[in-house]
Length: 313
Image (cartoon, rainbow, N blue to C red; front, side):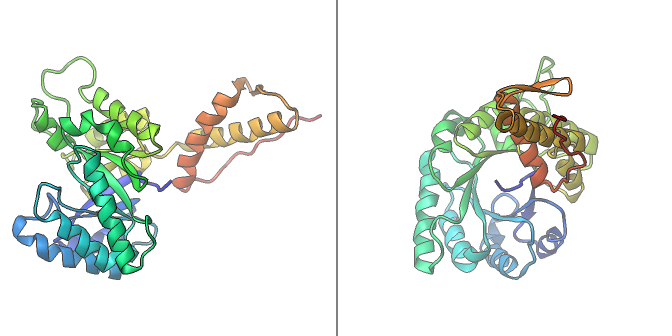
């Protein structure tokens, strides 16, 4: 599982932003050829993205390129030029505005053809599918099952809000007048359930008011609490907050590792299916929950500060 606590969007047509992104602590960088690039600059941006992937220092980062959607005439050339030019230094391709499984399958087949032609390992380059409208949401289970290359489902809130006529102009914020509950809860849970049912990661979309860190944290904590793996960030100021929100606390991480150690001891040494860890009962369900927190803590680079001591015999 790749760590994707923060997925930083970087315009593929801006060399200065691309260079700066290499030094930021975001887990994933996606070089954007879609919305962040003006139509007249798209073809030139492909060359800049290829050069950046081949020549930049992306150590420790997931390297992704977002191509244009399938309803445009740029999409196929985006994939061909980027993957032929820098496929060895590319981890995933992000496909926007996915409306059904055929979109992902098209990209899968094209990637396979390019990999074979170029002598790359077939299947190594993953796919991230962006869900951005009502059609994509209603087909999300089929999309999630569409390709073994698929790694993540990514929520695209701006286009999605427009597609359902949500009455707000602030991307990622609650619509005015919606005072009961969370207008995004069903959407986020639907993405999360489809992702987990097929072993995928779920990434929340961006929050556009980049200078309001408190609001960003509030929105990020919502999806983190549900179980999302990370959030798309638009500005360097959001990276540190996003990494923190989508990492377990030190206390929770230590607790999870203690549960795993204690459960292993009690089930193998004392051969019990359930036991006590202090005042807390632990069983197989506890182990599964602890595995999730421990995996996220390890991916975030946390180190244990507490160890399990078996009871004296």
